[in-house]
Length: 131
Image (cartoon, rainbow, N blue to C red; front, top):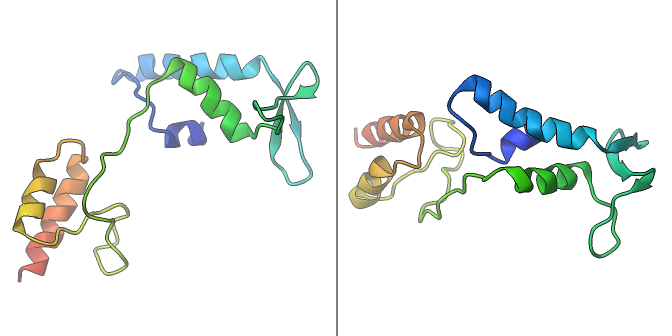
């Protein structure tokens, strides 16, 4: 489920409903067979044969999970931001944005798609850079 969670599915805020939504995916995945490879990965199978994409290539487990999940879930999309993630010099928060000027700082601070914790980290880093 960690790969599925990394896709940022839009789930209910109610934990019970969110788990029930995940169970839909689990049930759909359980209807397939899986073969473990020598490398320790899994190949999805249907009726004993590997599942292939439109080009005849074998489908990876991640692609299989994503393909099924896309039938049931919407996914949060990251906004296109003008600033890249901060390099190694910041406070160490992964995915943190480092504003270049006051206007960019204001834009980041009012962007509701950025989680509150990240905006608080941006605010702290901005304040420290101004000292």
